[in-house]
Image 1: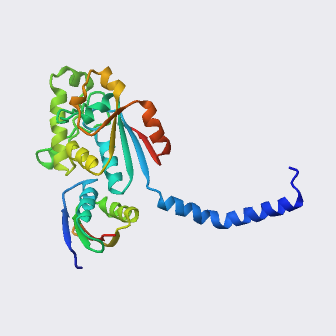
Image 2: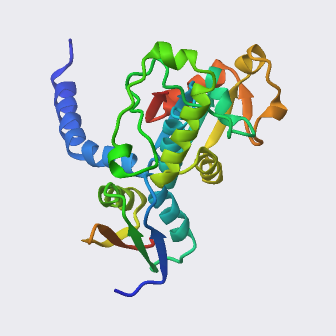
Length: 200
Length: 75
């Protein structure tokens, strides 16, 4: 390394001093920093509308800076009217199929309906969606409209992928106000400096 | 315990009790206390985390007949 004895002594002193002051300095920096989160929302169904808005609104309530980038089917979540979001039990073996009404024994039945039957019944998704909406209301779970509004009120930044807006033939008028229409190059620097980055 | 404002979050599920509490606290001034009633069992841990992150002080947290009562002092 070729360091002279004097430099070696100075290096040692610096290391020793850094060991003493660095942990506290790092903690100070950590505590003074506002946490941040960047979410990519790609799903456009009623069930998958929840995770981005629950996490975004909660993070905002904790005082975090939050950005959601809506792309592909996630565009459905920023349409002015989200009352038509649907849930599909078809090909979704993880979804319990229980009735949100009737006596307890009836509500506890898990209706195991084969895919081929689900696919063959017209309006099956609409019925499943109505049942899901009722279940959501029964459980005191917020509506998507409310979580979205609370997110925006709390300063969550909504950014939208302009490419997919064009790809799916949407217009900016289809969407809620107060959003930026951007590309990947605008989102990545936000994600780069975020403490939490999620792809949903 | 004395309080300046009350939030009834009974019957509400995650994350509504936290979101409503945040809003209610915003209507208080520093040092004032918010009483929260909730039935969401997850809210016990959630209000601890909320207090720690936001700096508002969780004065007490109690359970009675499957209902939870929290007192939070605004920072």
